[in-house]
Image (tube, rainbow, N blue to C red; front, top):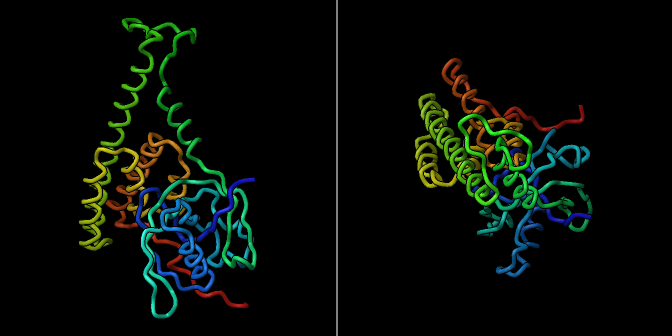
Length: 276
C-alpha cells in the first residue's frame, strides 16, 4: 500500500519549486483547505497532490484513475486568505514528485484521494546512474582508447563527478540560451505580457547557477502542451530533462519563427457538458 494523500486535479501539471496560486470555490475543495488548516502549521503534512487531467474536464464523470496522469507533484500550502463567499485564495509551492498508484473516491472526505509512492529515491538513483553514463569503468573489459589514460579505482568518483558537472553545466547553458531566445520570440508575437516577460527574465537569472531549478522553470514557463509538460515532469534526471527541453525549445522556436504560432491549451476550447 502506498501513502494516501488528498488530490487536486488541474488542467496542467505543477513542478517542484514553482509557485501555484489558486482560487478555491468548490465545496469539496473548501473542505480540503479546512482539513489542511486543521493540521498544525509547523507540520510537514500541509499539502495536497496536484495531478494533471489526461482526458475530459470533469474527472468525476469518468473513471478518475484513467482520467489523470500518473505522475504528480505535491503543492505545499504557503498562504490562505478566506473570502467573503466562503471560498479561499491560497498560495502553494511545488514540492516532491509522486507516482499515482490508485485513486480513492468517497463521501468523507468529499475530495479525491490518491494512493501514491514518492519518487525522490528513484530520482536520486537515476541521477547517480546518469552521472556514470558513457564512462568506461575499471574491470569492464574495455581497453582504453589510444592516448587515453585508464581511470583508476581511487579517482573514479572524482572523474565521474567532474565529467557530470561539466556536461550538466553545458546542457544548462544551452537551455538557458534557447529559453532566452524563446522568450524574446514570444514577446515579439505579443503572446506574453510585458510583466510576464520581465518575470520570466528575473526568474531565469535567479536559477542560472542551478540546473535542476532551471529545468523546472523552463518546464513551467514555456508555452508547451500539457503532454509535453507532463513528459518533463515524469523525467527523473535533470540531465535528461534538460536534453528534452533542448529539443522542445528548438521545435518551438522553429514554429514561432516560421508560423508565428504557440500551442493553445485544449481547455480553452472546452464547452459545458450537456446531456446530448
